Amino acid sequence: MASHDGLVHYPPAPGALHFGETLIRYLNNHCRQRTLYVHLETRPNSSPHIGNLVTFATGFALAAALKHSCSRNVRVRIIYQDPGPDHHELLTIDGVKYQKGLTGPGDSGLNQTPFRRVIRRLAEFFDVSYDTCSPNFWQHNPEFTDALMECVKYRRFIGTHLSPTTGKLAIRVACPECGLVDKDGVKNGYHPDGRISCDCPQHGMFYINPAVNADVERMELGPPLRHLIRAIICSRDKQASWIMCTGADHAGLYHEELVWRLLDEPEDAPIFFYAPLVVDWSGARLSKTKRVRDGAYQYLCETRREYMVDADMFLRYPGGLEALCREVRGWIDQPYRLFRNYSVEYLERQLRLRGMLHAVH
Image (cartoon, rainbow, N blue to C red; front, side):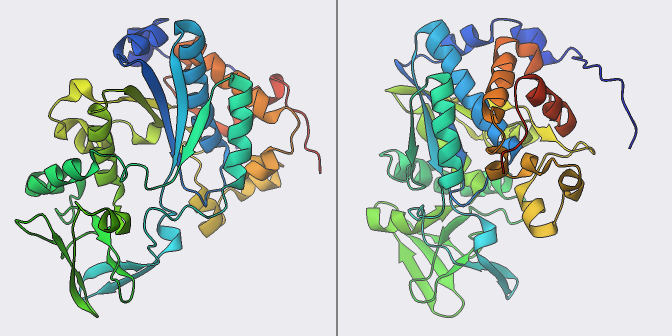
């Protein structure tokens, strides 16, 4: 692999040029409610890698800056999401994709230990309060049903944005008999009385009513639809402002087409704040799925850097998480360092410089 000169460059980026040193003041001024939540989300079965840790550290560092610089009543809110496609059996019947294994948004009883250990230490380092919420957090919001039915009302327009392949809303409900789920909502029907019909290839049609709590508990939304409804709910919150912190891979066209273009009142929408990505030698972001499913990043293991894709191993390095927190805090303090991505090699160097020691086995 080619060597480099070790010099770090920060080419002028539009975000850095626009905000300069005023980033925190800008965010504070545009969060008008008394209470402020910094939102983070993860899957309960996920074992985090260094990229996930960077996103979470960014959220906590941002909350700390708003708390200490602007005296804001700020709290980090972490919401667990559905375990994801790796935990569903996928099959195709008559050209329609189905999944089996959906247990509803309340199933958060999987292993959350790696993230919980990290979260506690992040909260302690940054002196910020936090809470964790189950996957049905948004479904329990009083605005959920109205937001969902608004999307249903304009489904022909919204569907082409959220699901370009099918043009449908991905409202997923398991058959009460066998558990099969129409993954993309292709065969769902929408009725004048508000009910939604779902079709099981084995047991026929069944109905749910979004106005009935028990039916809402059975429902799961595809990520684009969930993100849109989440933004609508946050925009209607009169008690708190929201900053949604996520990785920079969600920025750009994805959010332009899936959120901003579809909001009636974007000025009330939550702020979306993007954490830098951690990328491998080729410039691709680190992926836990690639590690588990495809055995990727063997070169990191061979060079004793497996901790980059294994949080349990990373936590064995004394001072490692604290070094990461100090690095990320520097990005918030100096925004020109925030609007870019970072390589595994750069981050490893910075962790060593900021006090990370060798692993304790």
